[in-house]
Image (cartoon, rainbow, N blue to C red; front, side, top):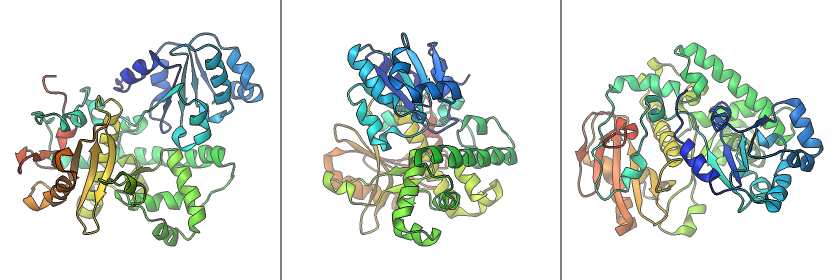
Length: 410
């Protein structure tokens, strides 16, 4: 079994927190990871277990002894209040390990019911480091006083296309043939849209959702505009926003908010939207390696999407726990990804689908550094070349593969 680097974070949370919720998209390996803790396991995908949980939530929870895993918890939301009552009666670290395929942070009454009693962790598709068996430390290295000398894994830029089109979902990684991966992705999307979205919305048919998801894939790594999407898909903005929320709740889209030196402005600037896995995005766009190589704009967007996804995965085991943003000025200066530590230190990442880098590629990072002042730690341009090159104080061009380089000395 491929080791999941989030496991240590789950173990740490279980040592001092009564309830740990491991949520994430379907087929990312939540159940397999939960099984690895060796504690009793119940899944609400089992019709009998689901019926018992829904009919008498309090009795169901009261009948469970010792630590327990409850899989697909979103299928019986009434369990959250019963778990709260049980924890309040007998607070014990590691009592419940819950898994869910719906984002609890976007279902407020679920997360709020266990506030102060539950830690939430997100399991995403395999990272490149997990696939290679080497724990990545790129995120933490960005904030180190001196930039680590990462030894980028060997490989050529020409091998990026198959990596992008595979993505990180475990069943997709297992399929070497593109057509077979696309067949799996087709079934995967259909299952989520027809089952999970229906369960969350209680609406039988949402026929605009597949088209909306494909449009979002065509705009991955771009600013979110509900007005433009509404015109393109032909539905009212109010309906579109409800549909978009369902896609976000089921982890089919990811939003990255805008960064600003003024904390109050972060909520009023447009976020960026990503499809959180490049294999899924490639399927939605009907891409193969030939088309990816001949359409530079598509390749650039997919490469940025890939970097955003890998950074998001590493945040799960980062000791520095930064948050992810993007940066854009009205003058057009922008930085693809911005990481901000709780201390306020920031690092910027620009992604270039090119084997060469010039000083002009750092213009957005320089603008970010000027605004952030002493809070700016460093700026990185990730590119498809093979050499690490300094471009000024705290500005560096690094090979894309540095992103999943192992920790120095490992």
